[in-house]
Image 1 (cartoon, rainbow, N blue to C red):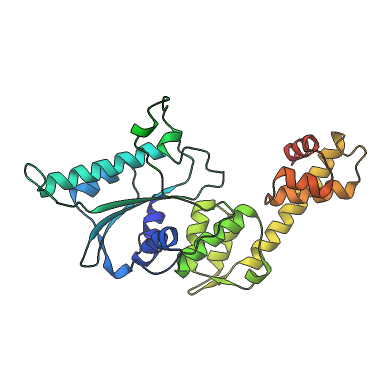
Image 2 (cartoon, rainbow, N blue to C red):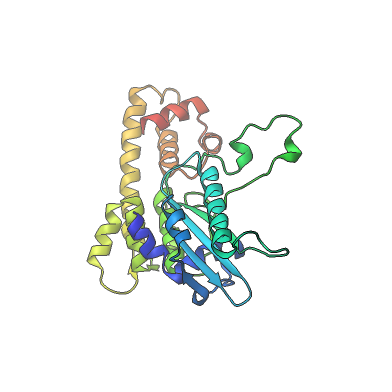
Length: 293
């Protein structure tokens, strides 16, 4: 995925849109024309440690080094890895620009790292250093906190990138992971590059099929995905009901309640507690039913 990640996210307008989404809710504060590719020894050193894309940003008043990482799996050590990347980058900058010591009042360029998590499973690793290290009582005030700038695309949170290509990519992943298409999106047209990158990330064959059938320009995707989700949901319902009946989950419960519960479980956009309250099944029954799907 690394090559396709660099090809899509490395485009200046796409690159800055990730940071605009996280920092400025999609407002075009950072401009792609101020981005510069960074080809120094610093990049060679840091990139060898799996940072995906590194660029410099300069608008005439300040110089920033932006690092963006695209993680396709949950890495328990990510918060420590990002700390290492930034420390390496700062020390490289100091060694390259100052012979012996940093002059008084010198300010170094800001280094900002964004972790773009494109995996389907929930991020359950540390987001802060304090969640990774043991902090003994009495040492809290001395502890230096460090937190990830993390974008998770499999949550209910909708990021606004302010750029069509990255917004289409973000929204496609949310649709696929949630298996749900909103009515207002049925006739929406998606950026073709975003469509292909979403396929690379999710390995969804329907996306590849749509991409291969399309030519240049934007592509309608949602109706085909909606049909695929409906078919997948129906299969899940039928399989769940069959196995649910076999396991005796239906005892004392109407089949309509089971069908509704299974459909909600397949769509995976509500908690077990919420489903239990809606359909009237207890949590233990829902847990067993979920295992059978």
